[in-house]
Length: 574
Image (cartoon, rainbow, N blue to C red; front, side, top):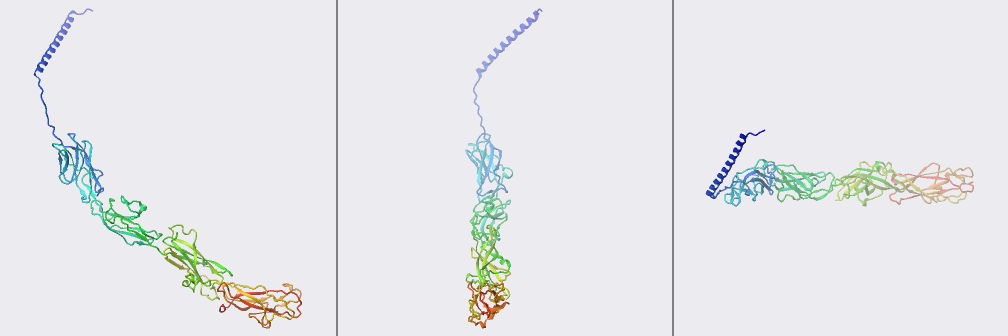
């Protein structure tokens, strides 16, 4: 296609014009710049920047909060914290005042218009500052505070407006003072097992805010308390009171079984409702107590299980005495040193048989050693133990049944207990038992009449039987014989039997045969009158015997059997 000539020329000229315009502008600007350069000058500048006061970015607060429920104890610190910005990026101070008045100090820490509670060290802006004050006895319970942040600008130091924080961590801070403790005592320093030891005090708290005016008493086994409790915990505490307005008391009830102990340590402490301990001479003092020794008691006494006593011939009879011994200082260990049993005839009475010197085997068996029955007392919390005493009663001990010297008596037992402080107690059995009569004797075996001719006799009577009592009564004896003496005894079918009546006896020596008592087949009592034994060597009695060989008797060896039976004799002959 053929281009249009007119259009080409028009575009060319337009381009030339634009280029020319640009060259013109460039030269104009260059000229203008040179003109300005020729007229420029240096001008100095200055400004005075004023000092601005710091401001709280974190409001002041107590850490931990000091309130009526969590006051600061005397001797402990109240710590204040805050964070501030500083427009001039200078360090700042936190100051706590008692009134709404603080003054900044050029190149230094600010001051309060009244009491200064505390002031921090210089703190970098934007970081937390702290200051602390130790609570003292002279502080009021409630103390208002005002916090300021101040800089220490060298020319125009400034403080912020005051802030009292908010809530419990804000103003005021509360101070808890120690309770007063002016007297401590114990109502009875010596108590029996099962009885209460009561500690008393004169103590109170002058603080009145919140519940800080109440106090309690702690009595500890060892010295020292922490956070309102004995250092050893519950097992280290004799007792503690509730919180009361004043003069608290507490009671430790001694267990019903408790070893006697002197001067048991008991340390007394008073704390307030915030567990702040009292001060003074009585705080932590040892107000000791003692557990008394109490005498043992004896109960359930028996003799021979309540049954009548049957003695053993020519020997002793083991008779049991039993009882329960109770000691509230404990039946265990060495508390009970001696348990004695006593057995005696009732008319003798315990007073006639309570020492070893009164011993008599007929009627008094004193101070018989007793032993504890196994398993009846196993540790020092046990009060009671069962005891058994074994008394060996002689065969000749006084009988108390009918037809005896003491039919109105019985045999009694008493058990006496003595503890390690020599305190003692005794109890006698409620009902005695009979000592039965033991009618027994040992009689010489055999009567040998010797060799006699027909018509001869033992004249005087010269063969002896001896009766020895082996029981506890006086004796007579019954005598009898078989019908005949025979060479073929006991058949007696041959020979010439010798009739029983040809044998005679007498109770005196040298009795003529003719004066003797003829033996019969029927038992006849003889007044032998053997005395009741009173020692282990009893009195004996003899009987003299003889025989006549009748006419017509053929020779031979004759034998037979006589019966001698011991019987209870008349009491007057004992």
